[in-house]
Amino acid sequence: MKKVTIQIEGMMCGMCEAHINDALRRAFPKAKKVVSSHKKAESSFVIDEEINESSVKEAIENTGYHFQSMQVEPHVKKGLFGRG
Image (cartoon, rainbow, N blue to C red; front, side):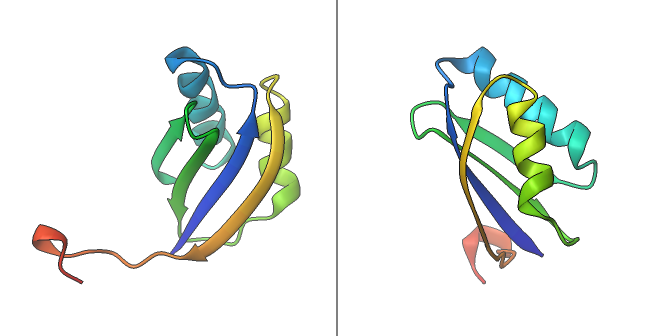
């Protein structure tokens, strides 16, 4: 599994976070743990399939926000009580 973290410009409130989350869930139905933070100006999700930057950028830009960058890293699922 991979954790995708996206830097986004333009989110100002909780509703902005909800719009981004909805857009990501629509664009990537297999995404899990979709979370956004307007304070950090980022969104993240976990997915088990390959993902390309252009499709992520399109999903973000279509909502009216500005895609800045994207990082993909391995996601290690934590066990009970946060143990690996």
